[in-house]
Length: 574
Image 1 (cartoon, rainbow, N blue to C red):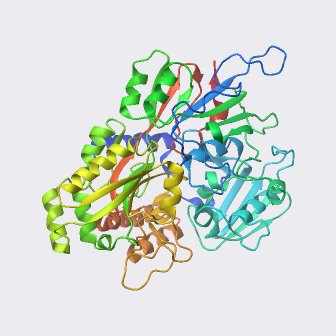
Image 2: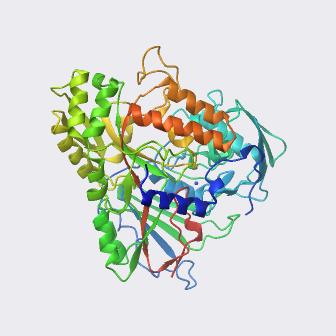
Image 3: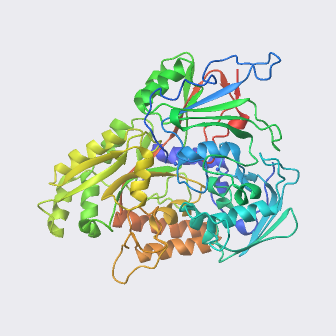
């Protein structure tokens, strides 16, 4: 049963998001409303914060006429490994690309409801989706936005027959667009007609994901290196990519179709240590920072120049067992034993104190389909030992836990978390070593399935349970008879399922939920799937974290957002 705090947080979020807007109720008749975490990952404290004359100093003149440049400095724990939204699962990449690219549909700032983006109206009826596109929109390269740009973007992502298909596209391609679209046609320059492979309830929300933003067709079919350049229609355009110093500089796009931006420049600056980043904020060297833990929040709390801001998160932190690699993990009793052995309550209360609650299932409490009748695994070493004995592993075994070094919102202290897990498992005879890596290396390593087990986490992309249940725990390939896991090198395998778990009963429930448009029926299916995932324990469920940011007093109109964003075009800086 969820705690009172969790229930309150959920009610607060649902109230703010409009309840049904978090869900996809009556999505078959939804029309456009008036007018969406991985990262690289050099751990640098101050490394990129000086060097080329456009650093954190105030008062630079912007145009030679004595006007000061207004600059927003965003501090984070890791640099972006690419600027290509189709070549990443990284939240650090999305923070930057979301400033330069727009999707057909967007999320309201700080809410889960959909709003207009490059489309001004839309409808979905079964397998048929139509969208009316915005006219008079210009890309950063000067070309005009039309339906052909979305078609080229879609084909680059998933169509292997397209001359400009991107072979290094991320796993987002299939589960965002590829698995669901039968065809896309332009009915004129500003009308799109999409035919789906099946009724797929979350589809419109997928169009608001960071990976579904629209790229210029001219850039796609030209010689533009989209890993180092951005050619979108967003409020900011790329000015400087400085990988050597872990910094990115964006400038306002004068021909932006929407409101804003309200600052001339945005600087993304990397400071790997939470405390260093917090200290830079209170010393007015940064304006907004993320990736905070309780200790760094205390630094901000005691200052008179900045404040902590929080919002209900839609994320999960967990430890995944790689069933493809470690035979012991294929026994449910072993997975449940480890779940009982790890003291997730101590991790949440002592390491993440005040910014997270214990997790017990894949679906966060703020989403419909969350099963309120499930409780977290209790810390019970005796029960854990009994299950290991029953499974034939009473004398223990050994494995390596791969984790990341850089802080994440769902795991602000990865090394202390891993150390606690190692101590807990030693109590039941399991020897665990820790393999901690820079985030970009971690992502590559785990995407290849080379981990025995891994600390991981996920921020929602679309505020739909499908984004957790299907994306993270469905293999998206056929499962061999008689087993609940698949080999990592299976063709078409969904590598975001870092447990290699493949329970056919669970898969069937999730697939039914995708084809169902009635919200109550979907919620029941997801609730059953959540119970099954809890009982089968392909993960150790660790935490649901709040979204926490440090914000300077000079900043106004900034909203902490659990979905999409950060929405920096509306932010103002004194």
